[in-house]
Length: 134
Image (cartoon, rainbow, N blue to C red; front, top):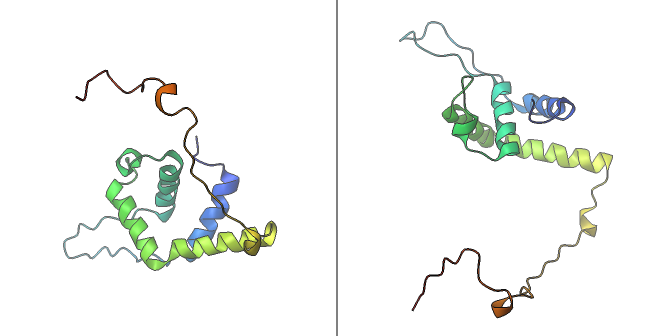
């Protein structure tokens, strides 16, 4: 079962792939003859979507396709290249073009109030195990 529907992930991948540089070619004449092939950017993208969707650890998402270290290092590489910042700007521009993003008409407000049933009215705390603090 996919993390997100393909009608959403495919356009996201297309935009991200357009921002990524061409991967360096693997050279079979590596001095030690042991260089592993680079994991596909698409696999890493899908793993990152799973991380965002499920909110779990890198180790929980890693599997036979790639390691947690590979996901982390590719994320850091893409951040360093500014790929996510560019993708964010593309998303904002697209939303503005399709729906309309009027930032000068947005108001943000917040307040903090006391709970009405605080104190003796609320009763014992469910996490209080009856220990005396005297």
